[in-house]
Length: 271
Length: 344
Image (cartoon, rainbow over all chains, first blue to last red; front, top):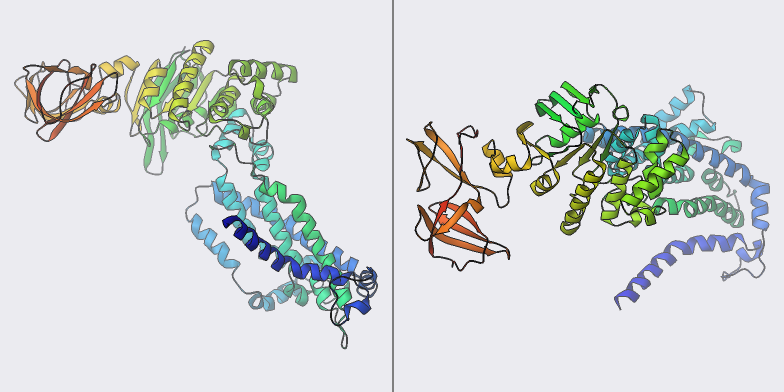
């Protein structure tokens, strides 16, 4: 009885979350006539990739995808090493005011983006990076660092220091300890932080809207938002581009989830 | 030449001296236990020996070589940690091989040494598994295996059994003793468990507040505690301690009197182990039975004398009943002055 209730609740949550996305997938596969049909059809009579073709031809969806990959990937590649170093120091050093530092880092992530965008635009302009992909990655690194540092610091703290002591006694220097012992154990935490950072940068819309006006450099969220024309809303192309925007994240999470969940530390400590 | 020599070692953290100028010599092949309550500095001392901490003062020599400024890996030691500290991403074999591979020992020899150690520790069947697939006792054996493949000059153990349940701890204790006899390797073993200390060690260094209270064989420690702290810490149930005064060769405290052979007079503490109190028909001491604990092989009788409760240990099942008055006499006593030093 209790079990079936749980299943029902779980099913409700899944349907609630997945249904809109499924609707977008279905819409992207309908020929344009069926998209406008009233009443709407739950399943297309003829599967068609015409929306995808038009999204590519009219809006250059592949170049949006590549821009997004560069910006989000670049952000992750910069954020994670910096965050890992900061988090390691915060987790291991006997720092006075460690909690204060952690709180300040959290505070830094609390400013609404609207409050930052004005000065940020000025700074990016001075650096000559408006309308460039690095010009977008730099603010993204700033926005994602606090979260990444928090995730990694709490994860690193869980890794017993005895493990590093054991490596030192076994004959490892600092680099070998980091590469052969610490990183493999910390990997799930690092992947988690990396995925969240990537997703944040991938989805970010507001800064992309302000800092990238050149259509050739735009990222997917901004590109999709600008698809509607003056008189028409091209639902098919929007749906197709949305599917293209979502798939990399779904693949990323599915591929890496085993690494995240595997909980490699089990066995290092008691229990 | 001693296997380990510590001279005036001190370690300060800020204003606190965790280890406060201790000196110790350990003979080759000895099993030396650093015993003490938590926070007494025993783990810090072990970490100083390992080189995981740098001493604020003093010297440490292993096998006659001064290692004070050396990295752990240059000290030729191996250490077994309380939490086992396995590398969770490596198999049991790779865990045990790790310290050898780091030292670039050839793969055939690595294989041979690991298999030898696995044989000794009954791990041969488990070499392909991951640490998380093992039971607590097996994990601890892997940790020990990782230490013995190295064939180091000195084995260090940091409370290796305190994560195990009572039965397993008992079993591993016996295995450790057997292993030590087999390898005859000099070992330094940190524990707060005095039973472990008594059963495993050839020598005990009892620590309190960063200093040694007493260093000696388990028997010396038990039969002639050098300080009041040592008397109270070693032994279970604990020694009975009676506060009082010595005047003219007579001790008096808590309404109990006893003739003692000391010259001094003034405040003193009299200590009697529970098994050194003997029930008699008519005796110098008497009190009311507060509680009787029947333990099978022996019985503990708690006797109230004024404000004090003394524990008497008798080997046989006793017919003593609660609330009755009984007489008893001390067979052997220990006497400590107010600073805690033994005076008789």
